[in-house]
Length: 420
Ligand SMILES: *Cc1c(COP(=O)(O)O)cnc(C)c1O
Image (cartoon, rainbow, N blue to C red; front, side, top):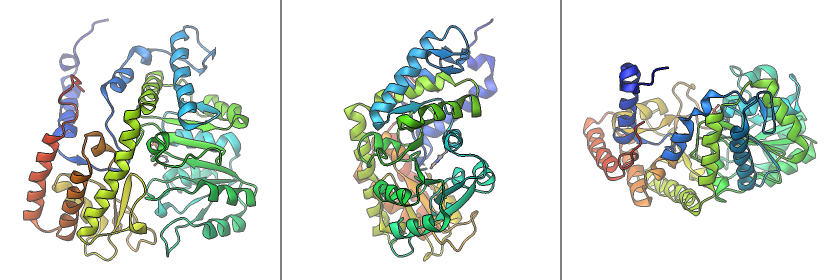
C-alpha cells in the first residue's frame, strides 16, 4: 500500500477541504444553533486507525477478535457518559441523533404504537413524527403544541393531549425551543396516562452536561442525544437510559438497526466527554447562556420580537410575523452580510415551511470562538439592522466589514496546527 499526502493523492478533495477550512475560519459568523467547532484532540480521534476495525457487539462481547483497544475506548465513552448525565446506562454506538431515536423508539415500542410528540412547527425534529421520516411512517404520532398565550409548552396543553390520545410514549426535547424543559411536568403527565417518557436532548446536551439546564434524569426513562451540537464533540448519537431498559436499548441499536459501530467516532465521543467534564466546559456552557441573552438584548433593542419573549438556553427564535421580511428573506440577507442562520417556522406560522416567519439563531459556535456578551449584543443589533432593511446594500456591506473584523479578532484553528 502506498501512503501519500492527500494533497497529492486527491487534489480535488484536498482543495475542497482547504476551502472549507477557510470558510469556517474567516468567511462568516456561524450561528446555526445545531453547529459547533471541535478541538484538535477530537479531530485526531476521528481521523484515526480505529476506522479499520469491525467491532460489532459491545465491549467484552464482540463478534470479532482483536477488539481489546476498542473495548477500552468504548468503555471510557460509556462510563464518562453515565457520569456526566447521571444515567444508569449508555449506548454510544448510534451513528447519529436520528439513529438514536430510531433505536430508542423500537427498544420499547412496536410499529403502529402511539407516540405523543411536539407539533413539528413548534420546535420538534423530523424524527418526532414527520410524515417524510420513518417516525411518522411507522408509528401513530399525535401531538401537543405550544401555548398561544405564553409561547411555551404548558402542562394543561400536554395533559389534555395525553388524556385525549393515551400514548404509549411521550417525547419531549426540541430543535427550536428557546426555553427550559420542565421534566417534572412531563413526568406527571406521563404518569397520569401510564406512558413512558423519552427526552431528546440533541440540542441542549452541552448545557445539561454542564448543569446549565436541568437533568432529564430521574424523570425520563430514556434520553437520546447527538454528540456534535452544544456538547461540541464527534458527529454522532447516543442513548442513555435507566437500568431496566439497558438490554432492550442495546439490542435495538445492534443488531436491530445498525451493524458495526464507527469506532473512530466513538473515540471522538469519549474525548468529547472528557472535555465536557472539565471546569472549562462548565464555563463554556455558562457563557453560551450569557451570550444568548446578550444576543436577545441586541435584537430587542432593534425592535425584533422573539418567540416566548426571550431565551433560557443556547438559541433564540426571532418572530418575524409583524415584520415585512420573511424567514427566507432574512436568512438570505444575513448570509450576504456574512451571518449564517436558518429560517425556521414559528408556532402558528402563517407562511409555508420553505418561507416561514422566523429565524433560529444559536450561540454555541461563536462562544467556542471566544466571543462574549459585548460581541453577541453587537451581533444582535447587526442582525436587527439587516432584517429590518433587507434591501439595503449599504447596511449589508457595513455589517460584512464588521463581521470580517470579528472573525479576525477571534480566530478558530488559525493558532493551532490543525490542517483540516
Ligand atoms: C439534530 C437533532 C436530531 C438528529 O440528529 P442527526 O444527527 O442530524 O440525525 C434529533 N433530534 C433533535 C431534537 C435534533 O435537534
